[in-house]
Image 1 (cartoon, helix red, strand yellow):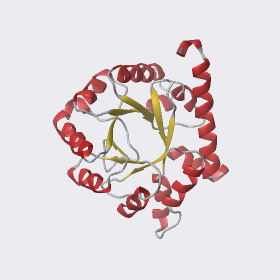
Image 2: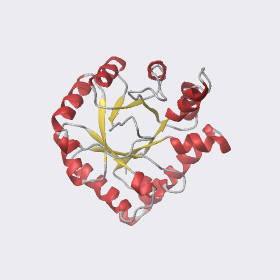
Image 3: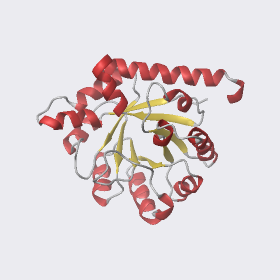
Length: 246
């Protein structure tokens, strides 16, 4: 079974900073803390309206000695910024100004031409591209067709407790791996629900943010990250020892 990476999203550290302006709390300092506590990389979403992460934040995050995953809409502006910054990875996500958070996956099947162009442009810059999608076989196949090397499965409905959603995620991860796509997952994951997702052997990366930033109020950001790392690793180890995953 492949190792499981943890990417920590620092968007909502910037949300708190922006509530009063100024420079505190600093998402880059938060990034340093989570990396020291066991995170493998940093995720940050540069939105069109710059509601949390700002361009200057991305520049500083990119300078850290750790992989940066840039979440972004597949717009010409964001593709140009990513090609200039050259983060380790980019995750293309749907984006609406009115949404509080990302509400679902990309409809890749309906946007093949535009997404293929964005994937190619980012790939030419040496950026690994993932598409944020629902656990839908049609969307997984479309992701392969547009040339994306990876997908990130939207775990929001699973986190909300919808029946059958875990099975959909498990089956989607298997299908992605069979098609040669690297499989990531994220959205709404917490200490209480991360275990089953971490145990899916085809999933190699989890991206988690809001829960960790919120939990930092009670146990510190480093403590929250260490607890998540331990929960992920324990679930992964238990899955590796199970004959069901042999």
